[in-house]
Length: 175
Image (cartoon, rainbow, N blue to C red; front, side):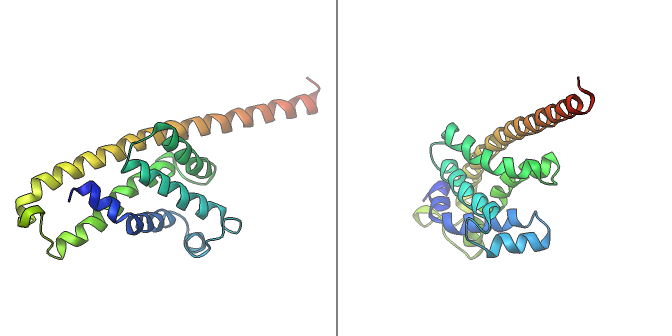
């Protein structure tokens, strides 16, 4: 079974682990709310993050459809761009996918799983490393896309602030 197949098979556990890691980037009280409350109206941030991360995960293990990835990333980044995160923290959630995948896929190897055709894991290590490297490169491409989206969001925020300042100046000074 390829690494990609294992990752798809463990989608639920990886998605859950990734969501918990992302929730951990928030202050403790917020993190608990994000994890506890599942209702989309009582917890729109948690709901959005969880749903969009599933879409990102599906694309990561599938076709890598740019439009679907962009939409999912944009939904999360719009939230994080207006919160008290540095740029690296705002898009850093993408890299948490690597940690979640590694944690969930290495559990099996640590517990003594065997590789394909009865070979031990050590015999299959180079093949697994190559697959993991390729998978992580896909995550890196998503991170680059996330950075572009973050910059677009920040530019939009600055445009809105500039227009607001100009409007106030017109109202206050009649210019």
